[in-house]
Figure 1 (cartoon, helix red, strand yellow):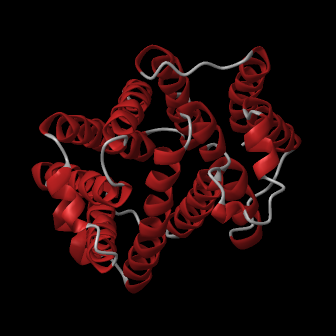
Figure 2 (figure 1 turned 90 degrees about the horizontal axis):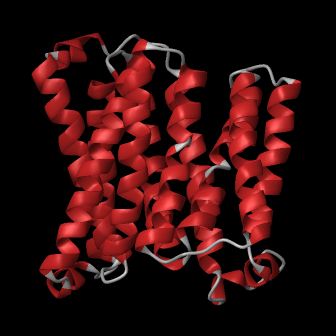
Length: 293
């Protein structure tokens, strides 16, 4: 059951990335982020409500509440950078950079949770980083050396990397909490913080008038992408609750394969021969990394 849930989650997340990319082309990233996460919150809340999981709220201790609050704030920042990165670059390279969450999470878990790093994990890390670099074109690689990257057209690379870093920090905080509380419950409270933070940022930065400029067609893609993301996230958290995390996260990460294939047909994005070699190396690195956990 959990293998099926993980596979379906990968499909939904893969599709959601493409839908969000199509929608974000004609919409403000801050608006897209706030709306998408509001739908994610609804998905977690409805699932927890119908499964009766909210009954576990009384079992949540102080550390769980601290974990939810801290991870929620950090995850909010990650989502802001996520949509800024997605809006600026190609789906293929954006997702390659996002895969670095595996590497950052490994390092943070080793430092703060004392998780063991194996040779397979090191080999997978090298392959993931190498594959990501191979997928970048000359301009993107040059931007990595630019001290003024924030002022360049390639600043989305920095945003994508920051999204991966903050997502990894949030993941480690969540992982450090061992309380046996249903993930839909903790995710609901976590995403309440995320949604409130993103809407506050939206209004503080005076981006809310942009919502009125979004066409009905664009809203459709944004909402469909958000719905697919919501379903995918609920499925992967449920799979994690039932099965083996290493296998589940490997399958889940393969959602990027679906996104990259779909980007070729719907966004007309193309990888060079070097890019495809990098992509194959990246995908293999994810599998090898998981095998070492």
